[in-house]
Length: 464
Ligand code: NAD
Image (tube, rainbow, N blue to C red; front, side):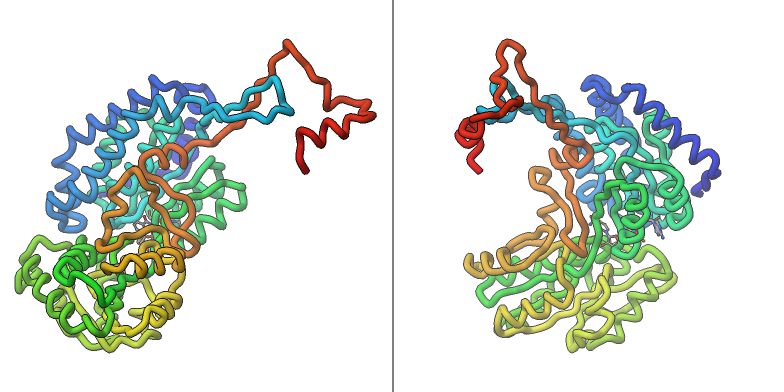
């Protein structure tokens, strides 16, 4: 059970964090590295509890919990632990002659006290991975897990309270629409890092704007998957089924809908059906396969099944919150299924003849979080990569771009702003402070009055 927090306690925690940050306790490399190592150890100690919680909340198999949650957190922790010293070092930059004798530096300052808000679909890693960035950056953090994944929220609170004092990192439980406005309207955070839906993201940005608080918004949307005529169909089928039906389709970067070149459509559909059976058997309800998070979401998803023709799957079980991997065709582009982010195991499929046609369908839901193309043709890959604005994506694969911490992960426009992972997380939770240091052994005096003929010197050094 999640214990709701008293509002006065909430204020006390946030005020204490401000004092703790102002004391300078979080600044040093030694402090930060120690906290990262402590976090890694406590996750190791509680690994099985985390798996159990994810099984309870989402019926995740341990393999999936490791590969898409805990393993990704270890990866982020390992990178931060290995590179933190280098990341923290002030960076020397070149200095124009006119500023002689000066040298210029970028200092990476902590932001201060940050609020990290997570959704329910990957409820562990989407809260703890940003925390790794916050700790590496030298910040204090308030964590808000999703109340819709309550078992995971409880184990997160346990892990955090065992490891950190609340004046440094604290977990706040409760209904998001109650506790988050309470925190954001009554206190100023130095960054709000939000992962969740577009409408809630918009309201987070509105609350933040009132206090000029910067935000990073990791949002959702409809991520298209395009299959070209020149394609390896067997690989495409496996990688699409894996990307779409992992966590029962409740993945922000899952392919939302499929656009297949008409010359390959029937063949690929047959292969996708065979692949679903090979992954989940004839009865996915008995397989290693996720469950829908709530009855409300179940009903929304079940409602989409009326938006077209079901060509595979379609079985549901409300009691078990189960929806079979489902393929649909003959869906109107104006139907809710093609307007809302599906965020479930239903894959609408469309044919196309020209890439312009496919682009026009994609343009109805602009700025997707992810984009996937299956094609052997590099000019087709170039065409989509150059002409589409999307957060990130893959050619001939799905999802895997978010598993590489050397590249940033984030959205664009409707799918969000800002990015993180690896070094980009450290940067997301740091502020660059520019400092110019000038020697005192020489002073050209060129910029002091009286100016007389000095414009000639100015023209020489500053070429306007
Ligand atoms: P959500 O927006 O409903 O909730 C996210 C968080 O916001 C939760 O902690 C919740 O408690 C809080 N919240 C809910 N209503 C609120 C309100 N009115 N005011 C303030 N806070 C509120 O999202 P969700 O249903 O938990 O997650 C699904 C969405 O998240 C999908 O759109 C998905 O695409 C997106 N998502 C994005 C990413 C990404 O990395 N870009 C990752 C996972 C999920």
